[in-house]
Image (cartoon, rainbow, N blue to C red):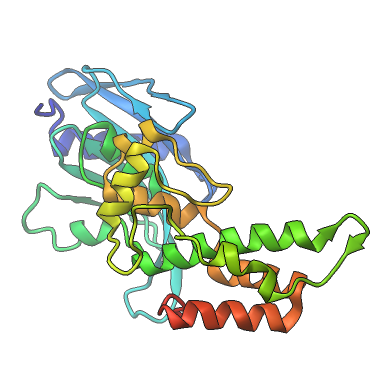
Length: 277
């Protein structure tokens, strides 16, 4: 369905909202709907977020305004700065935004509808909130996601760490866990049966999440939400949700000291799952 909002009107609305909001905490994230009431005029409309993360919008919603911020490299590529934006995702797939570069008083704008706007694609936000707005209109998510081997490593470590913690917390007090005690759980497929980790793709992971067969230790993925997300959106969700490899390895070192840590690293390295930053 085409949007009744044109990019020029949308940029004007975003500028007005920016002035009305004033200074915004960089950690703030929000989504509000825009509805065209007549040519050149709009009104804000509420949108509903379900408990499982699905955003519901009515047919009369022509755009979704996202308040967001991302850490990006400065033009010289030497420093990381926080870029705060007001972005409108339009129903027809277009996107426009306004932002103020750090240290500048000028409020700049961009639009994917402007073929001469060389910065538009780079300025499109890649965070989960913006992607939630995109999915509400059935549009593709935009994100940088790790290789699937990173998910395999984290899922395997979640299973191994969970078992190690249970053994560490013995009835007669904490005790050091030996690697031999974890070999059975370590041998299980990290993502569940039916996913051959050697050839698994993010599309495979998405399909498993959609049918409820994806295993991630104590973490669960809502099947309805997985079906609502696209593959990139699900990959981003898992990347943001699961503990990182180094954190999980740190837990193993606590419950089993260097012997358990080294065993886990050797297991991951043998499968080419251990990718140090």
